Image (cartoon, rainbow, N blue to C red):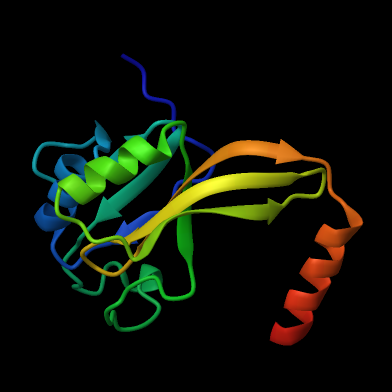
Length: 159
């Protein structure tokens, strides 16, 4: 079986590799796509998405990859969006596994350059605080002037 690596694969540094591996595979349903024996590094896949998780002893050999001391929650300022085909089932499985969503399942209108998507989505935090968003396009429609006006209104408040 051949494993094709996506052109962009985020690599998440873990404080406890085995705990993270268990979280992603046993609780969220990711598959281990590639791992060498007991190396604390793995490619994980979920539908069409891929991530890597890793832990290495900081002994000086990895310093260029280690820009600052790690403090939890890791990954501040980023959320990883996984576009999926069955977000409600994933949500139900996550909740059944005892994971409390960071952001509850909801539907939102999301602007794209060519259309408005209606997306059903929810977010969870992994053991190190990485924010994971599972999102499914449930419908789309043409952009209307009222959409542009609303986006301008919302973003005028935040800028």
